[in-house]
Length: 598
Image (tube, rainbow, N blue to C red):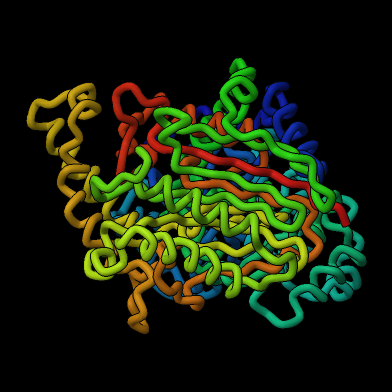
C-alpha cells in the first residue's frame, strides 16, 4: 500500500505543528500512567505488517491511521553504528539483501528494498530509528524492542528529535541492574520490564520491579492457561501498574491469542481483559482488536429498562448467614413452568443447576427429563450435611436421581438408552469446604478465575449445525424460516441423542467424555474442583449466558446483543440450538452472585 511521501515529509519537518496530534500522545501517556484506568491500550506489532512491510514507515503510518496507541518496532545497528528498524538477525527474510546488518553500512542498507509478507520486493526502504521517531512524533507512542543494549544511543536520538515522551523501552534485565546502568534516564523515558510467568522466580522478579523501578506497565508471558500465576499477578498489580499481554501466538498468553480471538474474541482478548486484568494488548490484528473494543464498550454500556430483572425473576433469594446474595436472576426461555434451570441458596451451599434439554418424549407430572433432573438435584442439595465433600455431594445427587428411576421402574430402560436419562449440569459452592465444584458446562467466576467448561463435543456439534443452516440460507431459506424450522438442529439431533454415551463415560482417555448428573456414577476425575481461597465474590451461572461477566447487567447486555444480531446462535455465538419463534432466548438462564462473609 503506497503512502503519500509528501505527507510523511511534512510530518517529519513540522511534527509539532499539528496540535491535535501532540494532544493525542499526551492523552495516551495520561492513560498509560493511570493504573486504575480500564481503557485498553492497543499495541500494533511491527506496525501494520499485514498491509505494509513490517517495521516500515508505511506500517507505522497505517497503524496510526487505524487509531492504535502504541506501535512496536525492532532495532538493529549497522556497521557504521546507525540504528535501523529490523527484527531478524539477518537481512535475508525482510529485504533484498543478505547477511547481518552489522556487516553493512547505512548507505549500503538504504540501497536495499523491503520485502512484504509474501516475500515480494517492494519500493520501500529500511527506515532509521530517527526517521521512525520523526514519523511518530506527537502522533503515537513507540515500543522499542531489541533496543535495551543500545539504550545510551537511543536516548541521544530521543533528545535530538524531541521525542523522549514517545518511547517505551523494555527488557527482562534484573531491576537493580536496570536502575544501576540506566537510572539516569528513567525519569524521562518509560521503561517496561518483562516477566515470564512460567519461570520459578517470576513473582520475586515482579515484586523486585515494583519495588525498585515502580514501572507504569509490565509485560507478562505464560504458555498455558493451567498456570495460575496470572490471577495472582492481577491482584499484585491492582492500583500499581498496567498489565501488558501479547496475543501474537498461542504460547504468549496461554492460548488466548489472535487466532483464538478470530473464532471467539471473548475467549481471546476478552479473557485477558476481563479475567487477567490486561489493559495493554499487543496484537498482529490491530484493526480487529480496535473494532472488538468499540463493540464491547457499546454492548457493556447498553441502555435498557432493567425493571424486568425484578418483575420477571423466577427466584427470590433467601437471607443466609455465611454469604450475601448480591445479584440473582432466573428465567425460562419459554415459561416458568418449563424452565429447566434452577438456583438454590442454603446457609452452607449455593448452586446453579441446569437441566439438559430433553432428548426423549418422557414426562412425569407434565415435566420433561431436564426439569426433573434439576428438581431432584436441588432436593438433594437441600439435605446436604454442611461439611460434605465434593465426591459425597455428587454421589448424593446421583443417588437421588437413581432412586427416582427405581421408584418409577425406569432403571433398566435408562441403562440401555442413556439418551433418555434425566440429565443436569451443575456448579456448587460449599461454604464449609471453601470450594466450588463444577460438573458439566455450568459457568463460574471465583475472584478473578473464570471457567466456562464448555464441552468439546458441543463445540463440534454447534459448528456442524451452523454449516447446515448456512447451506440452507444459500439454498433460498430465510432467517425467519430457520427460526420456525432449524435444519441444522435437525441434522445434529440424532447425534445429540447418541452423545449421551459420552456422559460419565468410564473409558480412560476418552477425550470427549464429560460429567453430568444423570443417576449413574460420575467420574470424579472429570469434575473440576476449585479452591475459593481468599476470593470475596463468586458467580455461578448456567450456559444460558453466552459469556459470563462479573455483573448481571453486563451478562444480560451481552446476551441481548447476541440475540439481536444472531438470534439463531450460528455466527456471533455458535450453539447447538437457537432462539425459537415465541421464546425470549435460546436457552433458560440462571445467574447467582454471592459475596462471602469472612
